[in-house]
Amino acid sequence: MRLGAKRELFARCHAMLLAKAFELGFEVRQDELKRGEQQAVWNSRHFGKCGEYRHGHGDSDHTFHPIGSASSLHLDGLAIDLYLRRPPSTAILWATERYRELGEYWESLHELCYWGGRTDKPGDRLSHDGGHFAITHEGRQ
Image 1: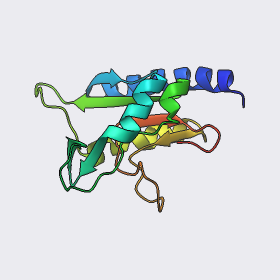
Image 2: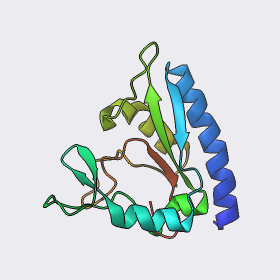
Image 3: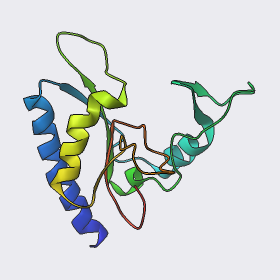
Image 4: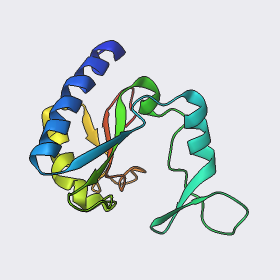
């Protein structure tokens, strides 16, 4: 499937995902639907995940794990990051498990739909990114 057709598929699935989130009682914040190349490169080099907390790369002696990719699907308009909250709370839900029902719904919409919270794929570097929803393209998730 060509990129344009995948972007159209993404738009249809994205609309259904938002409707499902609202049906489940979530409020949704959307981020990074279309990421620029400079932002993608910066994400791949300057932020890391240390335990459960994100830190700037800096000069500290923590383990550095990039949280983005210079060839991210966000560049192609094939991925979005969602942040959920459940009213009346104003707190964003960060735990991947809180996104599971939506992630499994997303993956049921089409064989190309990929959820970043999927934890059963060995070596998958996005396996704990519950808010990441994408359409796979050229082997990328």
